[in-house]
Amino acid sequence: MLFRRGDPQREKFQKLAEGVYPSLYGTALRLTRDKDDASDLCQETLVRAYEAFDRFDGKNFKAWMLRILTNLYINRYRRRRREGLTSSLDDEDNLVEPVAPADEAPDRQMFDNMLGAEVETALAEVPEVFRMAVVLSDIEQMSYDEIAEVTQVPVGTVRSRIARGRAALRQRLEEFAREQGYLRPGVSE
Image (tube, rainbow, N blue to C red; front, side):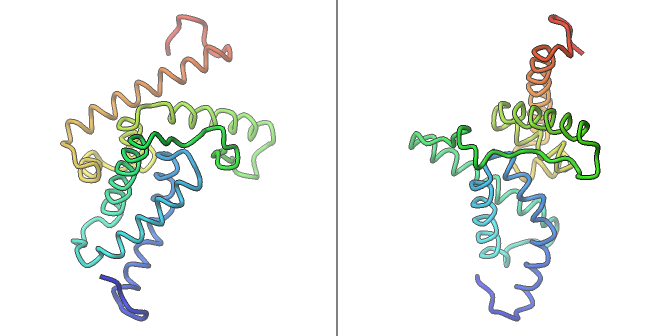
C-alpha cells in the first residue's frame, strides 16, 4: 500500500526510516562489500518496507527493516550464485575504505585505516551466514532475540553462528598479525 503526500502514515514511515538508515546502510555495506550494491539493497529495502508498512506490528522497526534487508540480500545472493555472478573486489571505485576521525594525528589515522581495512577484509572473508550474525551482534549491537527474529532462525543457531563467525574472524586477524610480525608464528592470543 502506497501512501499519498501529507498522509500521516507516510510521515511516520519517513521519520522511522531516517532513524534507522545509517544502521541499514552499514549492515548492507558489510554484507555486500560494495557501495553501489549496498545503496541498491537499501533502496530496495525501503521500497519493500514502505509497500508493507501497513503490516508492520509497531514493535521494533529496526529489526523489521533489517529482516527485510537480510531477506532481500539472501535472495539476491542466491540468484547471483545461480546465475554465476559475483561482485568483484577488483572494482576499486566501490571498495569501502574505513575513515578515522579527521582530528586524529596523521600517523594514528594511517594506522587505524590500515587496521580498519584489515578488519573489513577479514570480515568479508567470513562465510556469509556467520558474517551476518557477527555484523548484527557486534556492529549493530542487536540482542540474540532480535537477530533470531531478523534472520528467522532459533536463538541457539544465532549463538552458534556468532561464535563460529567470531572464531573465523579471529583466525583471519591472527594470520594478518603473523604476516605483519605482530605475533610470532605458532602463537595465538
